[in-house]
Length: 365
Image (cartoon, rainbow, N blue to C red):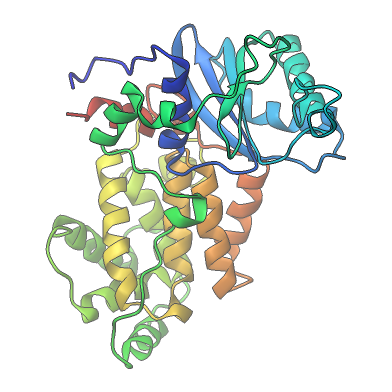
């Protein structure tokens, strides 16, 4: 595909295929919003559906915290994924009744107040899909999921490498441990010699050594890796100062302190080195099989942080939960899980020009 050719949506089934492919998993009991900039698709956002008893206005305002992150948006599309059935539809008193209608209407109202146009909404359940706000027999017809699967855009995104898992947790890589009984000891002994470091002293020998080891490993990411090499790389992640420097290096390896702090805070406005981000994800995937379960929290937190940089909040959240399942007090995972829960996104993900989605679009073939 030509790098300047945008994804074309010509039918409703196309846009319904676009959402899960962009998220990387099939949403369940979820509200998804795709922001629009004119006729251009921009950010894809997903949140859990609330309890039916949840206040619609409170929920709508929480959703708008995500939507308004796209300052360039002038419209949006809404998708409600649920197996719930509205009471009126259950009893037959209102065949057009939709679950979460009050919540959807509250979101529409909040969007109008923000100057955004809600240009469409759809209900997707286990049987099929239909327009969400329809109130006439002719348009409230349940369409089959096969139309989405067979859509031209779905075929295009499959060929372009957009994977699709059953849910966010299935997008989390967690391979079985295949290392030796001494792997944990190797990691522990290596970390013992890494003392408290000044996180801003990038010339410190330990920080320099850790960065060099990871940069070398990234350069051979297509090759095999040994257990000793994997354990050494994990060892550096056990030190907070080195770990944070490696997080920032994945985005921009500059030694400028201000840029370093901006990256960690999600305030980096330039385009991240997306190729290095992908290479780092691939390297972490290669390291995991040699890493005992009790030592995996830093790796899961790293993968979650990279997913967050890419704008994949649901996958990031799943990784942070995975890290906390191993170390409940792992600070990076706790802080990032809270940030993701509040809808926080890095600036690079909120700008179409610098986003990971734009990188993928330009590198499709």
